[in-house]
Length: 286
Image (cartoon, rainbow, N blue to C red; front, side, top):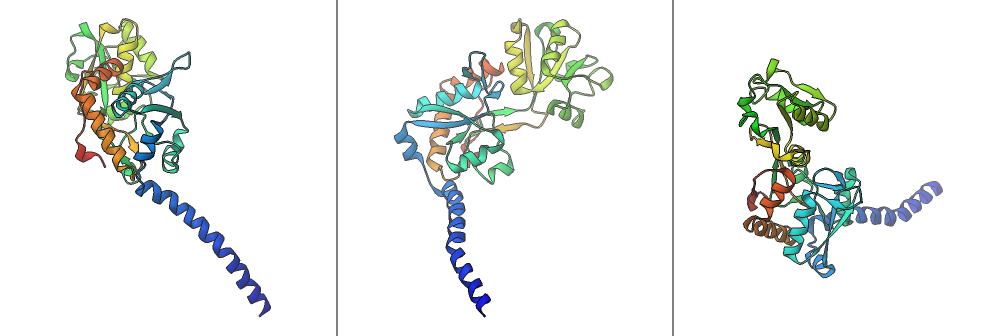
């Protein structure tokens, strides 16, 4: 009887602790899903943006340590429209959604794909980029579409998404190339060196990387990017907490302004080398 009594006392003593712990865990998730932080963000005058600062060409550091990239330019332009300062914070990419939920950052803005699985956990802005696979060729090659690679040599990075898509959808490009077999490279840079040397006639890579390399390699004016919607396309958007309904509306509004005034198109040309002013529908943002 005494043992039972002592056991009951211990359990009663632990209940408040266990209850508090459960409450804390619940409150963090609840706040992320229900609390609108726009007024706090507006009062602080800044938007804290979580980035992986090694993700070329979206967010990366130059040799002098300066943060540059597609998403750096786009987020700063959005913040300017909203009267905010873009405050970039480098994060452990594997912890990005935890950082967002905990309030360490306000948004995830780093070539972030709005997948169905992620949409269950967080909210997204309008899609501002469709990132699939693109072909880079020399302008004087006579290649204007994927079918023009008939009998020509293609380069692709080994174990890349480009290689996966090339094999999974052979009718799009693989069936046209010489021997239906690409030259495999350890990295895209090596493939582009061979393209410059004329040892291959095209390089297939993710649109982000392909566009960046095509516009930043030596004699970049000699190259062009051939985009296609025949491969699966990632839908890139800004990730935020579900509770931040007002912030989502504000970012969507600002993206619309940038589309109308040509800023979005200029950023696409600068970093990806593509003439695109694409912006997904507001209805897709949730």
